Image (cartoon, rainbow over the protein chains, first blue to last red):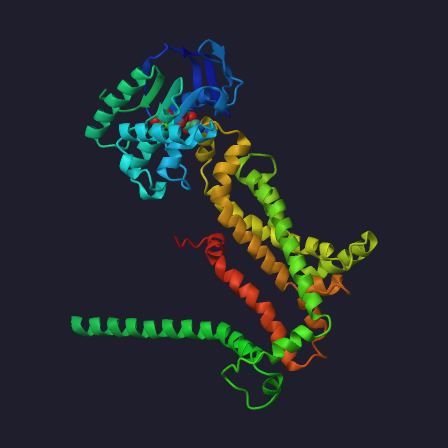
Length: 196
Length: 278
Ligand SMILES: Nc1ncnc2c1ncn2[C@@H]1O[C@H](COP(=O)(O)OP(=O)(O)OP(=O)(O)O)[C@@H](O)[C@H]1O
Ligand SMILES: [Mg+2]
């Protein structure tokens, strides 16, 4: 059960009010799409849910628990960053397996999960490469795969497919929705792509 | 008409090229010829070094170097140099790296002043500082110790360590650390798993650079030590009494590690000076 509740969340950067009293409930296993103009605060909201930014006021609840005070790693979330944040010193395989290694999963399990999500994202042939040897769209898919591999309760995706060509994007989005529905993950999907 | 213009332009370009090449050759010779003579004389027997005419090819005779190693106090001085440079290296990293992490990751009051202050330590000429330092060291019992000298060398090296590592730290996007946090890292593990591997080459470079700074430093070493002289101070002290081949051998032993190290870390020095070569 991972229902996300955002209650009266506001965020100010100095004098600039980035978020103003946001109230939002995302039901368990829902695939919620956040659509909005550039600079309207979508990333900021995701970062508050992830615990990378503290809200000026308001509360964030996940699965019936208030999580504002928890550090990112204890929130049961995975996040796809708008600028990918793929680790340059690790191979694609180790990037995707990073979170699993942190959980100290056995090697065989890490390999199994990495290969599965790499297959989903069509990057199974890139596993030995480094981030510097990937195209923008490939890097972006590594970032998505890395979050998926965690099999989190909640996945936060900040324009995860923006760098793919329209055809691949449509295909991937459908696949992503299928996978997340199957794994019963609650998802927030940020985009400014109007064709939905 | 256009032909002559073209020919003129080609001529100018050709002359420009000659000028360019000859300046490069001149500059290289400026640096390399003395080093070459140093090498030739070091690798020749004492008799050859002291005789005329000078040779231009090394004999590969180890006489001078053997004499150098056998000269009373020389090996101790060499050991002191290594010891002081080693301590300088460790201390400037232990002090410099955390300072840089704070500078590049946190906002705090007086940040730009702090940054300026670090660089300002290089604005005071060492001779000005050496005398009060010597007095203070004698009071605290730090005079004539390797540790005391290493402290002074650390203040000289820290600004460089900060300059080099700062550009590297700033080049590491904070999102990488944030991604690590969301993937189950604490602040500390994110640092060791993500930041450290990325800045390790830079840390190594500034460590080596600190070593070289200490290795080559002579003024503070000469003022602050008496018995525990470093190699530079020792050579300076014996400059008028030592024979020519000893000076050559000593100079060579001083130059070689510095050259090798600088060559090894040149990429990061360029980064420090803002010359991108990647
Ligand atoms: N650290 C910060 N300091 C000051 N202002 C900030 C900071 N981070 C974001 N902002 C401001 O907050 C607003 C919302 O930013 P945010 O990144 O959430 O936008 P976004 O909706 O994700 O836009 P985009 O679609 O372009 O990614 C912007 O106007 C931005 O300038
Ligand atoms: Mg954004």
